[in-house]
Image 1: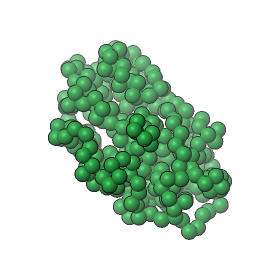
Image 2: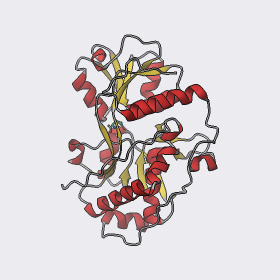
Image 3: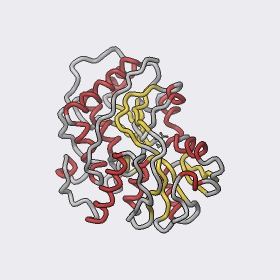
Length: 312
Ligand code: GLU
């Protein structure tokens, strides 16, 4: 079980809702009993759809869309080790999570089917190169939209807003906020905003960089580092796997709008993806996607973010 040592008004209501709901869920039950809302309950595994969205009738002239439609499937870069957002299910190898469901909505819009997707594992540091090199058509991977990244890739969305938090072992009382990370061994992931934010907010932290947050969690459990820092929902997913050993502390100290990474300059495709997201916000599909994934531990559906249709 995790506890927050302090909750303040600065903590977003989403995080409070997530943390409280996760705590309640973890206290109340163990494994998913399949009685929760959404399509996951019916299949007992990956949500199979049940969305209202339908295939587009008109497709704009877009090189990315042409390539995807000719291939007959969309190649999506995502995380494979992040519970709630993108996690490979060891029993059937399927990737499950909110990011996965957002990909399915796009697959429905393009092909009329949620399953015309090839998922390719991306870690934080190879998201921009994978898009730039055409290894993936899009990236949906707890991927924060920011100006530095926008120089290399484009973003549709945001489709969710997270914020950075700190995770420690359950018995740790020394670390209570970001300032306490100074002088401590802190694990985060190379190429993430979490790394950059950590260096700014705790300049004398002894930063341990790895490729994945699951590897950070292992280092924390083994006592090789004293804290892990990244987005609240990424940490809550890890805590759901190690509920007796790990907890969140402090208050959320950044804002991380999650976007869909796209090849730079294909504005017609960006508009198509943004239109798809907006329709899913309006027809309830986005909420359904949330409920069948993150909602298993945090039933309160957040309000939909406002799509940023920026001009380059
Ligand atoms: N959202 C942050 C980022 O895009 C941290 C999570 C991650 O690395 O995927 O860098």
